Amino acid sequence: MMKSAKDALDLGVFVSDIKASLNFYQDTLGLELEGKNDLPLGTMYILKCGNSNFKLIDPKKVPPAGASGMPSQLGFRYVTFSVTNLSEICQTLKDKGTKFTIEETELRPGVRIAMVKDPDGNTIEFVERSE
Image (cartoon, rainbow, N blue to C red; front, top):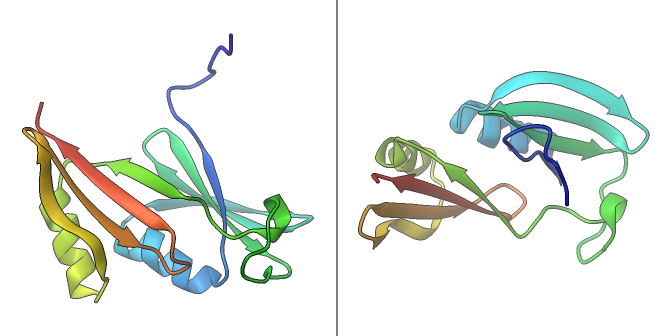
């Protein structure tokens, strides 16, 4: 059985436009840029989300749509950010013109969610629990 070394997961996301992605994740959502590293595949920008690293990879060559495999594929299926200020985040996103795939809603008692797309079309879910 795996023994985790920390209480968080890290996620690497290959992006097509690093400026748009940094604007979305850093400037709009407020993730803090911890650093950047040059890699053989491109440049990795490490953003902090709690104890997790949210890593944006700006590939040296952007893969074509529909490609598969780590260096040839953009994005992921979806990521969930657990938050304590869902309404504030939703208002900020609306003010920036972000379209919602699921508007702010109560999923079940004590659990509210909203979902949007990032600049590459990846689904971002925000969850607020009052439990």
